[in-house]
Image (cartoon, rainbow, N blue to C red; front, side, top):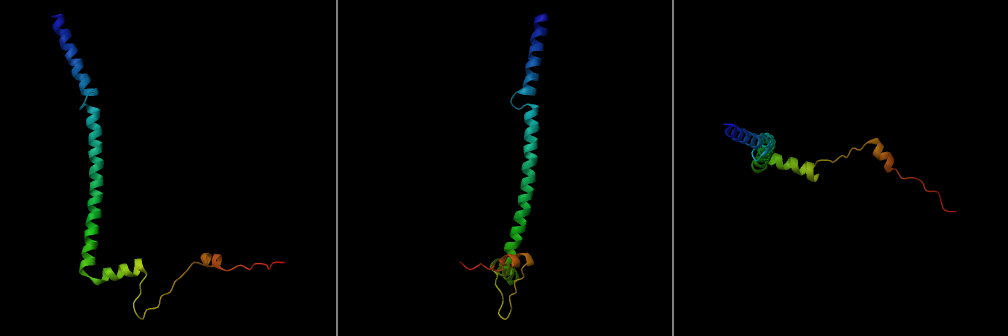
Length: 105
């Protein structure tokens, strides 16, 4: 009877060890759940990005307004008859002013 109780106790300890420290243990399960949640959050962000890119592609294919907006903002293009004005900060213009250089003696 004592031998049977000892064998059963040993098996119980072995199974508990596998549950807490072996392959597929509870800490592994918790780690994998966190990894899945992080991946799902990343996937959600990528899906939103893909949706916005698809809408932008549709705008570029269907209308001239999006193309004109891109040409103006990224390429600096203007229409015929428009005048281009460039506004700068006062700090930048002060730094760009030429300085007098003393003549060589």
